[in-house]
Image (cartoon, rainbow, N blue to C red; front, side, top):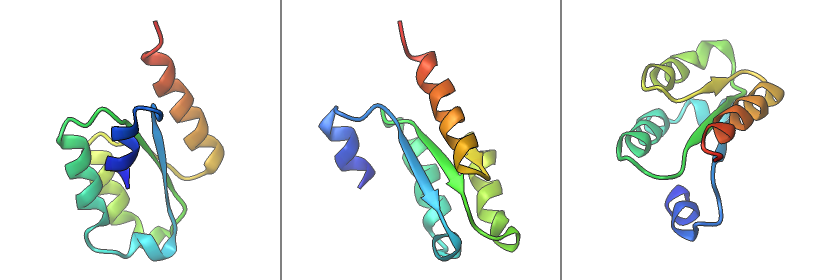
Length: 88
C-alpha cells in the first residue's frame, strides 16, 4: 500500500494507524522499518493506539527513527511539523 502511495506522487506523507490487532502482527514493525530504511520518498508517522503491553513494536519503530505518537492529535501535529520541514 505504501508503495502505491509513493508511486502516485500525489501523497507527501502517510500517517499509519496501529491498533490493538495490528500491534500484535509480528512483521508489522519490521516492514515499516524496512520501508524507512529503503530510502523511500514517502515519510511516515505512526499513531500507536495499541495497549501498553504491545509497545515493544512501538519501541522498534522509535529506535529506527520513525515518529510514533500515542494520540491522534499528537500524530497530526508531528506530521505537520515533519511536512513543514520540506516546504521551501
